[in-house]
Image 1 (cartoon, rainbow, N blue to C red):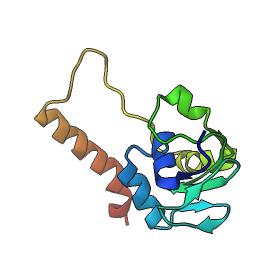
Image 2: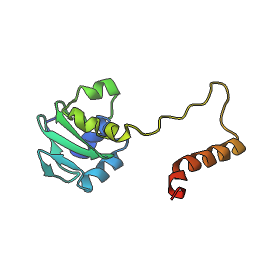
Image 3: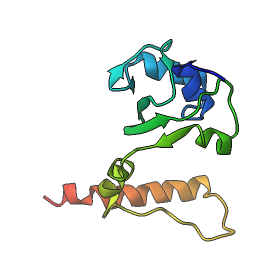
Image 4: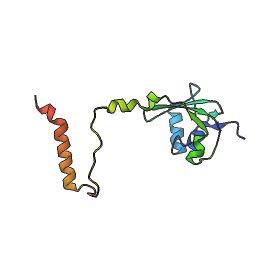
Amino acid sequence: MLEKVRIDKWLWSVRIFKTRTLASTHVKGGRVKVNEKVIKASYLVQRGDTVIVNKNGFNFTFEVVDLIQKRVGAPIAQKCYIDHTPEDELNKFSDWFVGKRGVEVREKGTGRPTKKERREIDDFKQDQFYDWDDSE
């Protein structure tokens, strides 16, 4: 049974990052903390450590439950940590989007817009968003 594992290897193996290089880059950039300390990629993480990852504008908080060195399937990887990320952190961008335009939808079966249709859509969007500047 493993006692300690490199942090970049653990982050990659439990699928927090898609590649080990990406995990290592985040650690080197100071966007990963273990027990409230900024660490190096060679830091050895152990069971019970708290890992804080700043990824895509979110601050995820994980508790290390199990140590693995090789990438495994998602169901097994989820058993290796406990996610302590606050709910308001996960929803912080949803408040920003309230009142914004919704997702664009095309009727089923119409396919992708042609070049001409796309230009008409772009012109329409530009008219909708920039008319208020011209009104003065």
